Image 1 (cartoon, helix red, strand yellow):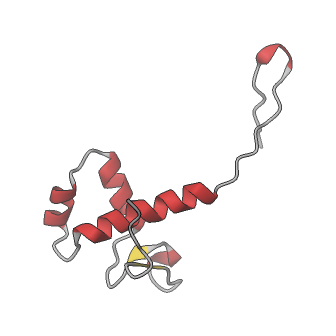
Image 2: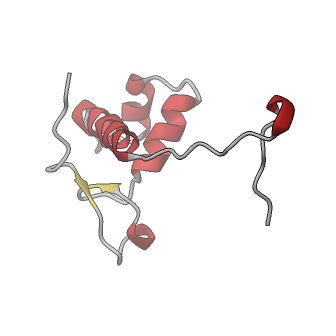
Length: 89
């Protein structure tokens, strides 16, 4: 299911250093995703942040999925004998 996030997520360079946040809060999309990744249930996040709605959390996930969909991956050539090259600085 595709959840619309345009009305729920905003980016403002003056708020949270321009990270995407839930509109009207200082809660970043990153924070929500990290909590979900840690296994924290949506209901628990909503209890911890009562001004959030379930749709805000779903919008954060949808936003992240759309960013990943746009990501371009460029495979590195492999070294001889199947060893993978690594880039170092």
